[in-house]
Image (cartoon, one colour):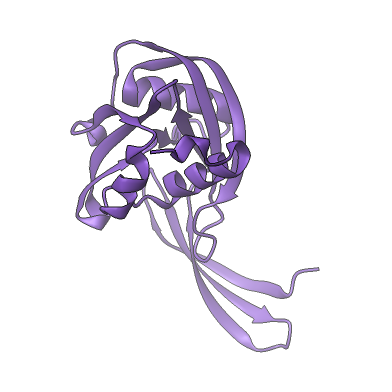
Length: 184
């Protein structure tokens, strides 16, 4: 049984990428509360790896006010029920032009569950071949580059990689494979 009961909910804002709602609630002790929730569909994140490093994308992130590197990731707003592995393959091809011979699940995790129930589904892509990228208009400034394994920690330290989903996927990969992927 939930410790919190939602007593009412109202839509505050909506666009094609997200919905923001305000929920009134009653806590387990009976006291009232208010919660703002951002509803977004789950997304796929892909860690494209080869023998020398990762393939990453860099783009301007408007809310953060800067350009940052991250693993390819996204969702299909027009098809929220799409198979998440298909979304992963699609986002990889769209953002990098890469196709993966093997795509295996790494983990699923909440990125920011203090405000949203959205989950990231991380995959590891190997056996990569190059093709043409086809970024969406919002990703027109997107750049793709190969990042050697040893450069990743330095990019984090320099503030060039700050995306929480990218950092979480990297940490999960380190846990799974050991520190070898972080070797200088």
